[in-house]
Length: 436
Ligand SMILES: Cc1ncc(COP(=O)(O)O)c(C=O)c1O
Image 1 (tube, rainbow, N blue to C red):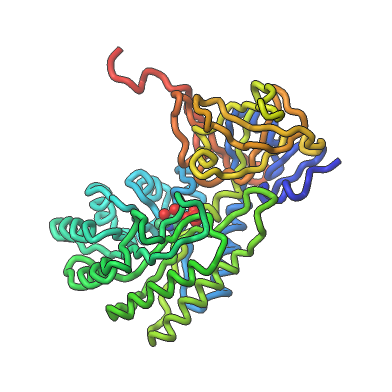
Image 2 (cartoon, helix red, strand yellow):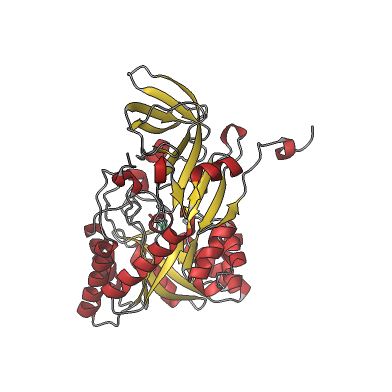
């Protein structure tokens, strides 16, 4: 038998399963787990590269103006990963001093950094001013005044964009919607705050407004909300006669997590953005702006695979089997937070028939610590190695030390070469506390 092609397609580009043993970049996952321990995250270099190149080509085909890819660090960031992306020539979207420091240390130039966030601290804004990052993306009228004051006192001009809330609701989990009228993010158009921010920013001697930005959510598979957001933002820009020289429709494009998810080419997204921006510029009589997209998930998700060791297995009340693994909610919050769905494969028996209905649960003290409810596997037993594909985004970056466990290691897999992206944290010790 061979591994199901539908499942294999969810794994990184270089995945293969000779004899039922899953390999990535020529490395047998069982060997990596044996050497580095579990839970373990691995990232396939070829997949990250392919995603960036595919998006670059799609943007070039969809839009005649200048374009840039800015990676959203929140999807997954570590010094090692940041270095790889800096080498690949992307920009980076950061939301904290920590991400900004890692980006700078990894070699991102200040001109390739955008600082986002709905409540940036004085220290974060001061660091961005000091570094002269490409843009501070101002999220509110309050922040506009705060930043202007900081810039004035520092005697440094701030280059800014405004994060606009266009009032569109994207087709995704409510916790991932960020463009509707009730979101905490951005300056709403509907109540006049966005127009007011543009006017105030243009009057300021210390703020230089170059662009408009929006981010309407994450894991979005329909293009219409993007077109509508762009349309509303340009209507706003015309209303206040502001021609943006930079324009960012954010990130948020969809990736497949299970074989049931649809296959949607990235060109659907870039074509929609490219056509909408061109149409609005024609209508306004304005030159084309530089378009900056900010994908996180689309760059990192498919490159990553999470590896867990199976421990206790027992019958569940509904006729299925509980299969407990040595990670869970502390390294992957997504099922608990968004009811996210995943596929799973036994990494050393990928060619065996999946005959047993199981619930894959973690080891943490929460009933909601379920990685997958109801998935078919070959009969699993203690010691088996479980691989969950599409694990590269919003997993490790959201990982915690819940139950005082250590966060997993992450590896970067090039052909015939393994590099450490982040080391495994040892079980938390008393160093966390002061005194005895
Ligand atoms: C401002 C901003 N840009 C880009 C992204 C990246 O989104 P995604 O990873 O879905 O592409 C996010 C994530 O929520 C974001 O908040």
